[in-house]
Length: 602
Image (tube, rainbow, N blue to C red; front, side, top):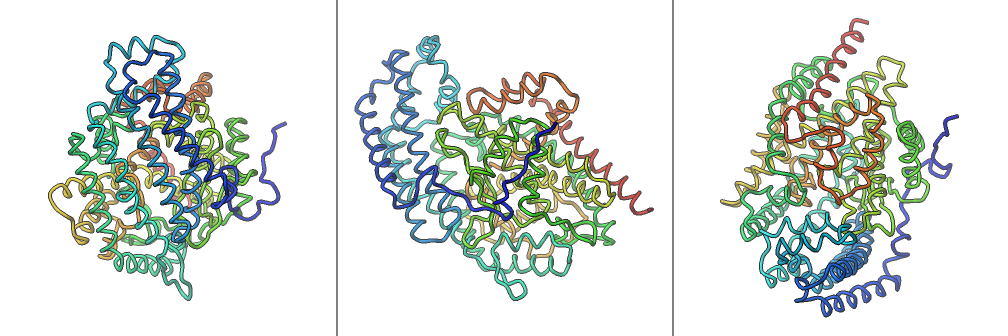
């Protein structure tokens, strides 16, 4: 008999998380104890190894890496707690100050251990190859490969230290200013003042007038603050340009590609393939949507509007958990068991609250603890899919934790795999259970729109960033110019089915990825196309699939993505690989068109 998975009865309403597994509280003595321990360990590490790394034997290098990893783990624990605490209290001055202090303290400790990776990159290639013949040291081969990848872009030891120490008063302060400003924004909807998350959520409402009011109010508030958002964007882009120049990165996305362990040519092939597919994907889909909404053209606030006038079903937190867990259970009892822990153990913060981060994320924290998930649950189908997505991250991060603090993080192109796969499992499960034709249309449109948001929209975001960073190399961009670039990429990606009001030019300002992680966004499109191919293999009931998939997720950053994808027979260097991923989306649009014709005639 199939074991059923359900949320515990206490979790009827969206929960708040309990960060006690990291630290009991902001003022708890464990924080001061761990900070002192971190600093002492870092200073001892420096006294023991500085200036000696190139002379170490394989055994001593292994010992040094393990000590370095312990330090990284402790620093990661302190930073994770401060970051997660701040994520639900953005704008709280005391908690903001606490996060800043922890950043400064961990950076101070990092200053004592920075020499280690710099000196590893000074080990001659033949010597390192000889050292790696030691079987015990091979455990860290993946990490050493990543460190060595940056060898050509390394600055002098003094400049690297200066750069590290400056970061807490530079880049991270600008990010904090952006986050706090965005969290404090209030939007007047009816008689209520709401947060950005709540205002954006109204754009999915069935009532067109409500959508229009919310869209224009979002634009009004963003316009009022666009000077500050433009200043932050320009400053961070200029800082990146300066660092790229010193490190001899030839184009804006190059550093991100290297950190992601992916070749620039692969990303360019993905971007080119998706952009060429715009007419057959987004342009076609939104023309179809306009037709069935009885309009000649859509307004930009109709992009995520429900198709059918009845709107969309609302889900309770418990229902959402049950849907996702059952979908995971069908695929793998191991996945369901890990995902259920997040729900039962208080590792999720899903409640809407003032001063909370507006997005959704899964934070891996450190291998000795467990990940935490943040989302803003309001009961929509998209929220159910977001839960499936973030729980996928949580499962992935739990499985890869055994690689240790230095190698637990998957390279970015694979970091979104389990999350997007989790969404696909949940969608297919719901589609299989749907008996009502209207419900099938609703599910299909929601999934197609999510995939368009993941593939088309994220590649348009990537284009926006590329153009902004390229232009910033010559001069500062005015708010008007940023708006022009935004409108250009939106029109190219969404097509002629849309009527963009002038006020849409301010909508770039609320996308946090541009500020937090430049050039992160293509990872979503990468993962969506990759997952479509993986799901196709899974559907063929390949007996080796589950074993290979678990290996991929468990590997974290210990192996290059080519090695992890080879057992699936995938070669992402080839254009037809990306075309294959896109063709699934095309076939879903075909399927929807058939349903809509039947529904219309029926």
